[in-house]
Image (tube, rainbow, N blue to C red; front, side, top):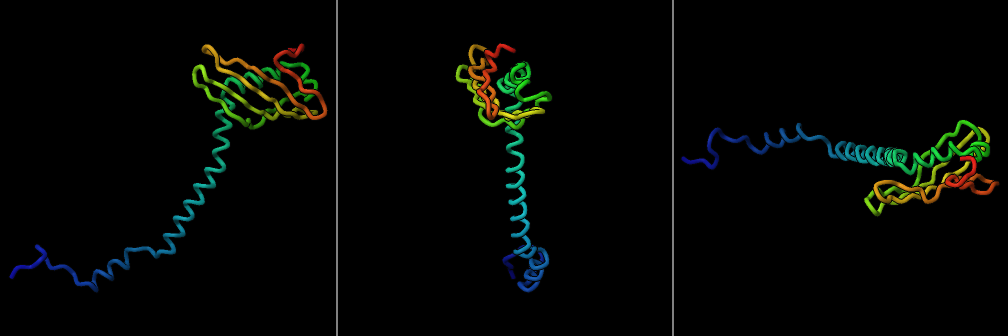
Length: 151
């Protein structure tokens, strides 16, 4: 007599049903674990993405040049105060050759006041050039950090 299955005889449906039941996790538990992983990924993305972007902006030449110009301006330091702290930058920096452009806003806080540094720059022939760098402090006129006499 020929059988459909070569080799030993296959277990019956009742045995297979019992084996499947012991190997599978309950569906609500699987759904809960997947939902937890998705929520954790979204939360991590929402928390870490701004930090990663800000770290990239902080490393850019326009950011560093703006910080240097602000710290080097006696007018800015006298208006905001000593111990300048620069916050998380917002904006964009594209460093493509010929088309490079940067537009950033950088919060700055000193011992006596706080304000925002506005930066615009273009990537020219192998280097960045700041086209605008000024400090806005509430209650005073903007300070042009590129032509400030105290630089």
